[in-house]
Image (cartoon, rainbow, N blue to C red; front, side, top):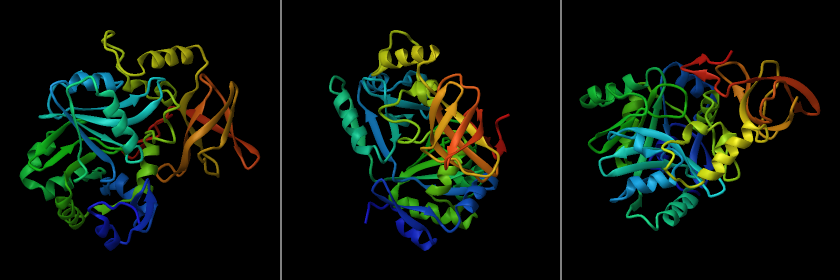
Length: 361
């Protein structure tokens, strides 16, 4: 038996198939992964993502520390509630983890991956030695992600006294609602909200959402949704050995101001130069519109050399297979090795579906 979130028995009651996920007993689906996927694209679904790790950073030098720790620049967070996506890099420029960081009234809140929890906490502790900061994990907090075209309306219906504040939120903005923190962030390519709240309040909110017609969705649908949205999965599309430049994550790096130093900066800059010279691969999208399913680990052959699929699946929205793959930069044509046969696949930007619609040409 693994660790369990505050909603574990709610998942059992909803008919969830439970699997081990990085040491947590989590729902992979509640009967049909495709139905859950389509529910999020068409209406609203709720995910229990309380297995993720919430780490608060306070103290007089919290800002300076995070400017050193993160490749993105928290100085951009000029108002309480603002959020940004970033990565922690190691000294060689590899991705220790990717995360969301929020500006809070006490400092900053980060949400990191559960599979990297111990490594992340150790890294933050080691790199904070020269800063006046307080780093505090918040294991008693739960996280619910409610996504889909009806998601915000449904959350407002179960939290009516907070509806006005919720409706005013823009993307990558959050606000305190008493014991709740709610933000317009997510991992599906649909509009929606993530709610961080005490675990003992999560079960009541879950019941209210289901009563309002929001359907539970498991980690299986979460994975197909994020891949359709072209979003990376740690341990698949990037890790400590991969530069963010080779993981389509350069947008998470703030090169300016030039005098800001951050861990891995020189290595990341060298990787950027290497890719510009054609030496470092890039992460692209692949589309297979004939029969077959693209899978992680399959070899890709391009006009510039070999590559590999890092994430692949059948897209329930597009009705064909899609993948993320790391291939030689500037490749124009490619084929995938499927059981010894070379099958042509199309290279596209790594973003397949947005708001339920095809997003690539």
